[in-house]
Length: 230
Image (cartoon, rainbow, N blue to C red; front, side, top):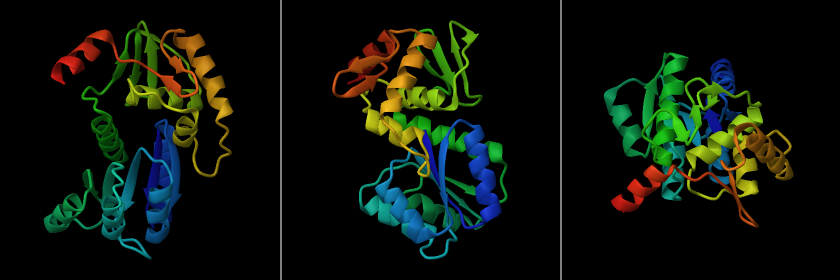
């Protein structure tokens, strides 16, 4: 999963980025509103942490530009402005959550996990498919209750597929969501990560759709409930 942090306080931006990287995310950062608006409009992100008081273009304007263009990326507004009227303005502009400074990093991470769950249609804090369980709170993956050791990129590929359970994800989409912007992206390496995940978690977990990409199917009971609800 890939996160964009738009924050003009360089020290705070680094702290947030480091916490997110430790949390298993690929992270891009910028400290200016115009550049941030461009990145959010042209790159693939799973969520954005957006400060309001930005140089160049303020955060509310950035958010309004995205929403007007149909960009539905989940956004957590992060700002020193604590007045309830500004919180309302942020939510009305299309923010998914709001966190006032100063804040605890653990709370920001929890709020990000929540908006990511909601955006992908998951209610439970853990992502489960058969014997495989991924817990974003601890970056822990287990199979049949036993911990499984994954590299950072293997974890990101698995997390993206499990957040998008039931959807076929192309190699290009996967590479866009597991690598930060300043890293060399090679969609061919995705096949390597898929092969390793199958070796560690079972060959039947990930389905290959030839010419289209890869998919993790939801458990049969969940799929049956979704069909009945529809």
